[in-house]
Length: 196
Image (cartoon, rainbow, N blue to C red; front, side):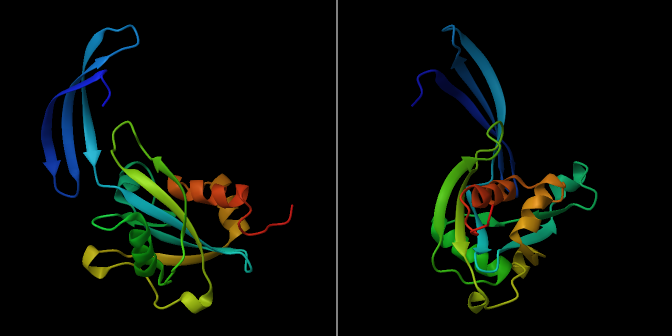
């Protein structure tokens, strides 16, 4: 435990889709002085994300869906192009991402590789996201994907040329942080064996 932090009080503000708490705490600053702080912490659980890629075809599988928070913050139609991702719920990281891949994209992957993990918005959100990559091919396609109807998911599956997808970052067509990070990981590590 960090001796410079003393949690004084946690108040539940909301508990619908996720949990929103107001936390009051004392923090010892770099001068050794104690300060009182209050922050809101949004706890939606942890998650996992995956980039499906095919090195032979030089392609990736992404998804497209409506994201309300982006819509209310100026994203004209609220649609985002993203890598497949989901909440861990009761699953471990690897089981979660395999299940989400099947539900969202229709591809059944058996071998995934964890490449890193990241806090995505540490100023207010508790979530840590686990990032994976996996190769796919047409033999792994078992359904159309699209998400789970009971969860009101309406997901469009996109198979794109990797370079086209990567260029969409600079063109502003891909704005999702986890997707940008995984596409950049693929480029830096030359997962698709691109020629310079």
